[in-house]
View 1 (cartoon, rainbow, N blue to C red):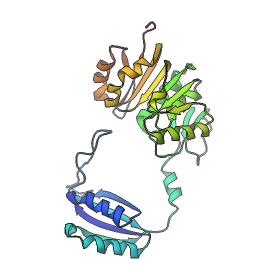
View 2: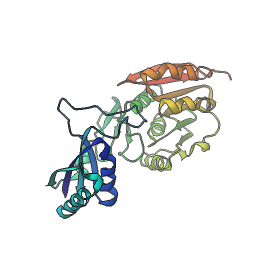
View 3: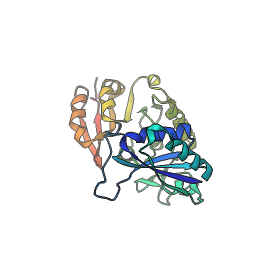
View 4: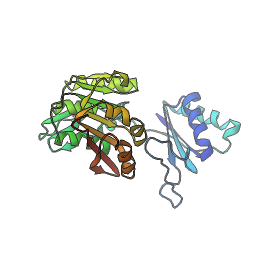
Length: 298
């Protein structure tokens, strides 16, 4: 494989990336701050779930991967011939050493501890000897591998408050990790729903791999009331979903909300106040876990 390294200004990052991927058939394209580790380095990020405030850094390095040198050379030649690309510069065209990419990728994902006895373990790892409960989950397209603080807090709460819930709803299930975690802690009659069919399919696959029985479908399939409702999404959709989520709670049922920044806690408490009181049960890396319990009588 060969890597084509280009330098471009902020306004050219998007068109150059699109040209490399769509017209010039690059295998991959990554973008980095060309000023990294200098006084001119800039942070570039937005709120979770929101687009970045800018499309690129003031000076960006684009790295495009090609199958061989001739493809990389042809791509550079064609790109620089475009009238709009006069400010794009070739920084390097270099071979990429052979590597076991699968092994390197897998090495980035180690077992994740939820509690000393409850772990999330990729299929290529052995479970720790102390683990009495294990979720087998490999990184995939659907959100929820257990590495994000919001997922870990939800699972930790369930591990510490396991009540063998008669009915559970995982709303916005992603990979199905929360629904699987509930099943491992004694839950029954579990519905996992998501608007993304890729998430629904991932949940079904992961449930089967973990020997868990649940129903995965789109949100309209959630019916009736549940003793535990889980929603690890983001503050904005959680705000809009308040009447839906609370409407699915049985009297005395638990509502567990995540995807909430600590500075958003009071806003969520206010929104959910007509139905129940939310308390902060956990905080990690600026994220908060909110838990409430529906009144015992309707």
